[in-house]
Image (cartoon, rainbow, N blue to C red):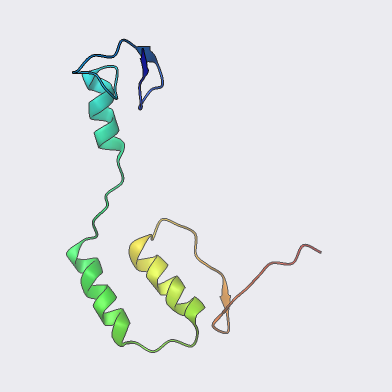
Length: 88
């Protein structure tokens, strides 16, 4: 018996079904993968980024985040430095 890597159900292992219980799970697993390559426009932006001057490494990190992962929340900066929230 094997466990499907996509849905977690138990299935009879054969040569054709090693990781996924059905072809649908195999297809869905392929569709859910995150892209591992970056677009050409992002590469050009990274080259422009190499020529720029930054106040701090945190400002550079924020700019990289905006290029490569715009869906992630921004890093709060104040005066070029990361703002660490207080728990008071």
